[in-house]
Image (cartoon, rainbow, N blue to C red; front, side, top):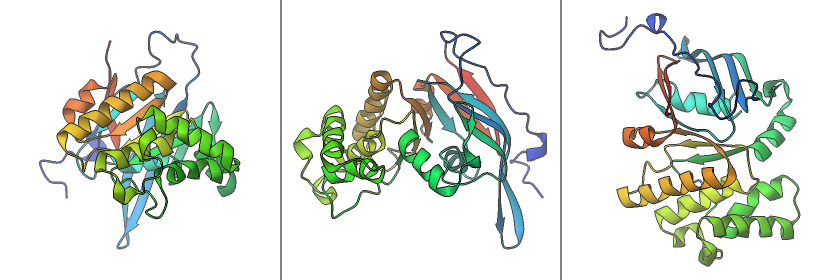
Length: 256
C-alpha cells in the first residue's frame, strides 16, 4: 500500500519530450534515444519496478540535470544509459544504433570510447599517480603508452593539474582527486559524460569549482552532460532539467 505522501506510480503522467534545441532544427540526429525503457529488480522474492517506460532523447552538447527523491530511479537510469546495467525492457540507441544488441565485449569497447563516468567517490587507483590513473581508459582501448600519456597530459592540463601528474590520490585534495576523475572520464574524448553526485562529498567552495569546470568542459568539447544531483540550485543552472518520480520523467524543461 502506498503512503499518502508518495503518489501511486500508475497515476504519474510523464512529461512530454521537448524535442531538439531550437538551434539544431527538426531534422537533427539524436545523440541518445531511450524508448520504453524499463528496469526491474527482484528483492526478497518481490519484483521492484524502478524505471517504467521512459521515452527521452538527448542531443549533442546538451547539459541536463536529473533530480528526484531517493529511490526514484536516478542512479538506475544513469547506469542503464551508461550501459553498466542492461534494461529489462525497451532500448537505448546512440546515433541510431541499439547498443544493447552488442555482445558484452563490443558493449564494453563502445562504453570505453563513447561514455565518460564521474561518480561521487572518485574510484581512483591508490597505487597509481594522476597521470597513470587518467591513462587507464586509453590503455584499455589498446592505445600505446606514449600516445596514452600524451592524451592524459593534455586532459590534465585542461583541468589545471599539470603540476600534479606524479602525485598519487592520497597526496591530492578532494577537489584535485575529483578533477583527476573528470580527466580520466574525458581522456577518450567521449560524446557524453554521466555524472552521479560528482560533488556530493566536497565542501561548497570546491563544489563550485568542479561545477564551473564541468560547464567549461561542456563548452570546450561540445560534450553532452547528464548530471544527477540533489542540489536544486545547480540543477536550475543547467540548460535542461529533468525530474524523475516513480520511475518516470515528470519534468523536462529546457531554458530558452
